[in-house]
Length: 487
Figure 1 (cartoon, rainbow, N blue to C red):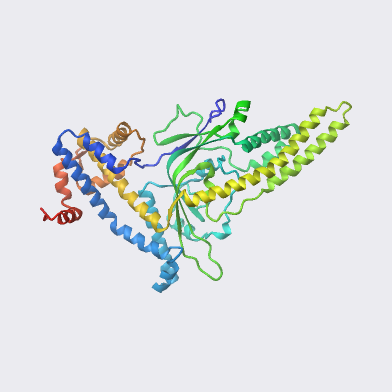
Figure 2 (cartoon, helix red, strand yellow):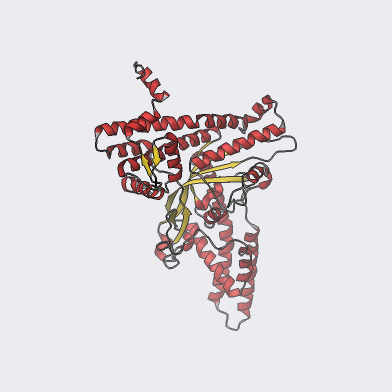
């Protein structure tokens, strides 16, 4: 983070998602092919690749949807009862459901948010300025804990036994307003810090915050010199870092916060003494500002003034009274000093109350917005969306890697990876951490790519590739619809 320019830049690991619509990708690549006959063969190959990959995943997706219906929070309990399954059998089914679900998450390039990423996201505030926490007593702590005990992973977040947050894609959100109350809050906070330094009470409050991690491992002070290929750098613009000036205080300003383009939260509610809850919640959100990540947390507690706020409230009053009495004992008491101290104390108390009321209204609006505007879907709808995402990503990976080998010739795995990323950047202006291993694996499975004696990959001709894959069922159906028999 560059302190001199009031810049706060955070670094996040880029996912292996290709952010280009499939029709645009196919038509752009087809137009780069010189001969018309080759262009038609390439378009035929793209269709056959998609039909084949869709068939590969069909059975797995059907199993996932069947399991989803059993653990649907609304109707799943009735379907489980009708199956007359034992508790052990249900445990196996829910384990299979999570296994399929997390596999689909991985294939559609969702990443599980780590502790570091969550810490960075919550290290600042955007529009939500209230301390939001999860009511852990309302969340099940057995399901996910049992799953990750059998499927251990690195860098699991601390809350993984209660809920899991998956994220994909990074964007930016900007808001322009006067932010009068927030500016007053910032001024009073800086005055409060000044009083703490003058009264030497700063250590008391710093001791409280020292328990929190101060180092953000994802923040980078040397963005220009240590940029990594798989990293994405985004800037925060916050009121807290704003330069104090009359123009900034009286005019509109624009704040900026990185966003998670897609968020999926998986959790289960806690069972009661009378009812065993087997439902698994899968909630899908879009464009969630990192600083307001709390709005997607499950089973949130109603926000209130924190004990720390009350401590500051009373201490500020005591400090103010002590300072005023001390000033009166001085033979030549400075009236302006007394006035500044009293104004600061009264302003801080008023700010605590009015800011809380405003933040409560903002919180309610954000929660409403997250339910109606930012929540894409839940349950079965989310899974259908994920399944389609998997197919689209897999098809795009195969098409791009085959196109590169077809146009540029043999390549090692590293060269192919670099060439695919360069193509995406040059033709579409997008940056992508291309998953070359997965792409080559599918090409070899299709039988249209092989390796030479020194390990370089090469592809067969377009016509051979179409013959190897063969006529698909979908093509036969389309021909039947058009009144023509299969060739």
